[in-house]
Length: 558
Image (cartoon, rainbow, N blue to C red; front, side, top):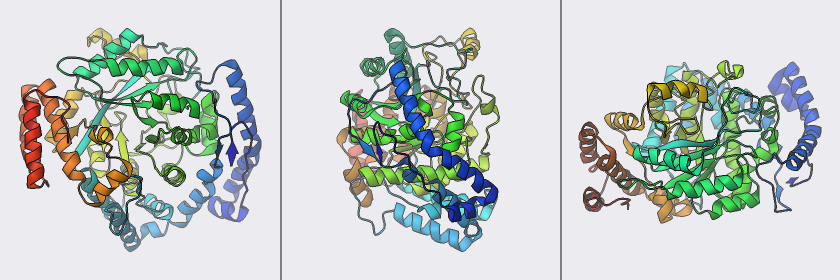
């Protein structure tokens, strides 16, 4: 167990296991790393205490006595390597793979399953997941089996709905030294800034005029932009209104680690949906190498962030890994381990999982040539496997990927994606001129983007490909979460709520922001979708609700 304020690092080496898994030379390296781990954890705590005294920590714990599970038990590296080593032969066996996939599909469809209080369902065991991760991404026969299963699960649970959102960066000051990030403290070329209230309101208004209803709000970690300022910013965001009826209905956040006491303050705003934080890499030694200094360099403290959120009652959390820092197979298994821990400890697994791939960042040579680069074939594979492993967990796709790659990934698992994204502070509300676009290079966002389409183009392309863009927030607001949601899922009734609500949000978007071409495409799609999988009573209810929307009512949902 780890106790707040106490150094309690314990790690027992098992030579017979690690030696067999890693080989003699790798074992020696692992042993050397692990031998220093006990002392390094104590050193990290001393560093954290020093950072606190210097005012560098963004959030300080005011609640004493919280004890936590040992982080080396939460992420058991030896077990991960063992599973990867012992499943290589099984990954080549079509019959074994088929058995795994059929079992996963049954779990996902809730066959012979009694829903609990959580929306988290584990579709794969660690061993099964490792087996699928070891499949050769170029083995078309085996990969088609994986992709078909991922598509069947996604289609059963999410249908053709794709939830859209936009990231909003408030400040890029940062005291951390993450080697892959443009915001890192050592990047002296980066222009640092934080939005004033007026600028923030302009940013939100600009996003609302694009039709956005859901935001992911981000900031760096620095005393120049405090947590108190961030809480105030949440109030500002929630207050912005634009014509004809623009408003932000869900604010998710991706911010530095918080103490339990500050998690409670965040929840008390009653405006925040999901609290997201990436571990970046779950491999301890790689984490140490990539995070040179600053509060973020504390692996244990970062890993326990979602625990602190849960204890504060903020039980809607997101996790993620930056693919390219370490072996993607390890990272996927570690995320599954982390999910299992949260479900076991708090009765609620992660609400979302994000899967960004490393992209070039201003001044970071490492980001240009990632140490464990993931090619397109293996990236598509890992996305499909995560969808099979955690069927009811939202999967988030960013504009780090190209439009073509994003289209491929939607088929095998993704349920949410950003649209019209900018990672520069204040970039949304600036005039869209040639000069401004040239200056964006000087602003240097957190990382480079691959999909530069405006939000309207993303919406149009989704509709043309048969997807229903959605801005729905009804389930959160009606309390259809957790146990209630799973009862609906078990009865096979998700489609009766989510599908009509996605159509209602699309119609609202088209009425308020769509041009004639988009309205024509959208009208045809809505007519088609109104008859897909809905009972006669559901069709009649949807028709009545649509009539309200077309008469000018907003925020209509079932």
